[in-house]
Image 1: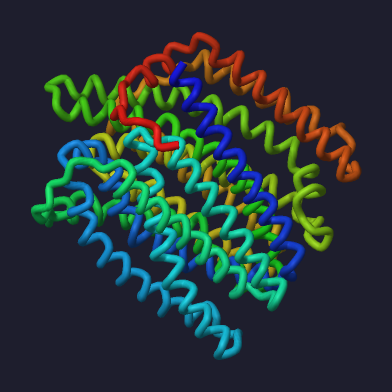
Image 2: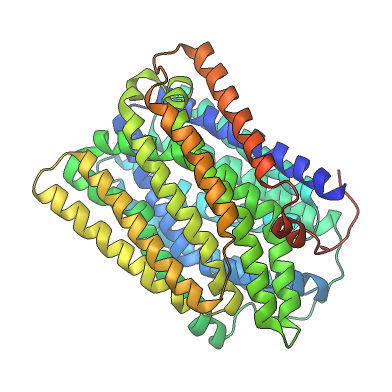
Length: 490
């Protein structure tokens, strides 16, 4: 019963947040031209560079030990050093912003630098406090503040762009929303939950953790950034801001759908997974526990991702009709190629959990290095020979598939996970149940008809997944782990 309640809370909150994200896409494509959207994409490149390369490795270390530090009462004392580090990272982001805003006025460059500093700080703490609330059992509060963040970011960005439409004003609005969400989640975590506290100083990192865990993870994340976001700099160089705007919009629309699913997985299933491997850390038979935990996670999540390929593929033209301003109507091909990139991204993140389990994060470097090298070669050849941007986008998809293939075999050497091929095969059949009709369904519906088609597709997808996971043993084993029990704060 509690599992169903948690799923309703998380699912409802994340769906609401995703809907706000889709409304935001409609708003930003209405308020900004393709060229301005391309400039916004470059600002996001800087933010994601700081987030993935400089922040994410330390954040993963925090996630890995949240339950342990929470129970010991040392979590907040360890985050003191993290606060100083994040501020330094935000200053680095501000300096890099100067480079990607070289075509803007001096006043806009100054505003962009200020917004980047605020955004990196607020987005990092937002992505720290809200997941911690979820991991310690405060699911409703976690979802609530995630929703508040999205609402305030949308309201602030739209309000500022109505006054002065530009990529910088939209970005400032996003920073405002994330700041409000981070502040609220912090107050709830510190005052509402009231954990036992150990006020003696505790270091967040030591030299061994930095060299053996964080640095390899940072290198891998930096290479992943190049493959998933950094390529935008190359696209802007060869094809210009307007073309980048169309490409980024198509990929962003695919990302919204896939990010929703990944977030649901992370918020609902990952706390059970991390708790399970934390238990394995304390037992002599930890390798078997690690293998079983990762296998169960994969056998629940991978079929969902496979079915989602079909759902998003058939939905692409209707999503564009409903959620994107008419000036971006030609972005359908980028949405469909973005689906391939997103599947590879979320699946690689899932597989890399093996490196989190064993703490051998060096293993993630090779897959992302090979993927990044493929991206560089594909984009450089396409740009130098003046190929269409479509071929560059296809190159990005090929690079993502290469990276994922290497990731699979590398992670299998870390933890011997055991795929449930029967369930995966059924999921593949379900995927083709969506993809094949996509070629003969009409694509010229109006807004109302497109909405109805999307609802039918969504309901059919949920029904198929419900049938797929009916009495699923992997799911039942995964969610039987007891999380920290605390009273609801709603």
